[in-house]
Image 1 (cartoon, rainbow, N blue to C red):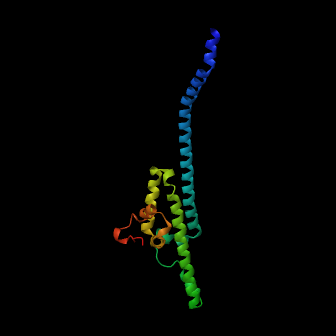
Image 2 (image 1 turned 30 degrees about the vertical axis):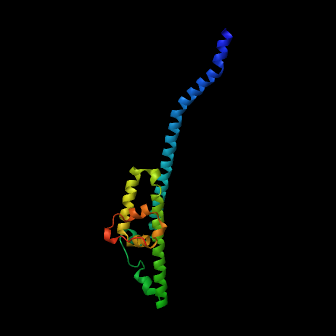
Image 3 (image 1 turned 135 degrees about the horizontal axis):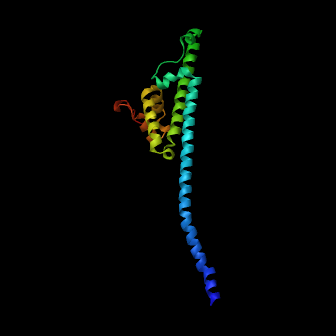
Amino acid sequence: MNQIIIAEITGPAWVDMAAAVVTIVSFPIIAWQAREAQLSIRSQSLASVYTLFAQLDLFFIENPELRPYIYGGETGRAMSASEVAAAQSEDEKKDLARNEQSRKEALAEFWTDTIYQAYRQKKALGLKTMGPVEEYISNIYVRSKLLRDFLDNNNDWYMEDFKTLARSGLPENTVKQAG
């Protein structure tokens, strides 16, 4: 009779009991791992956003003459008077103006693409972190005609929610409709 009891304990009932215990114990471990993975993703996304903004800062360290186009609402030319005066002919002056316009367009595209990449981290970062980033995006587009014009002229390049956010600080009558 003792052999039968031992056989039943070491048989399928014991395996089922062990499986149930392992399953119960593993749920908190899996939940902890999922939370740690979420924190890791959020941390990596935040580091990515900080890197993007650092790149923008470095860009203006290297190109301070372009800063007014983003932060100062500058709409005119960034060429210095000496550059214009140094041009020998009308053709050279036109070339300078074309180069300057190309440089401003490249700046607007670089800036918008960088901010857009930061914005696309929204889900990973959560509302607490993205609130100030979204406020910054809205404010920068209010201040910069160059960025507003770029977004208007390249309306199909960006997701609708990003464009809505970028234009959210503007008075209603200044927002261009897609089309």
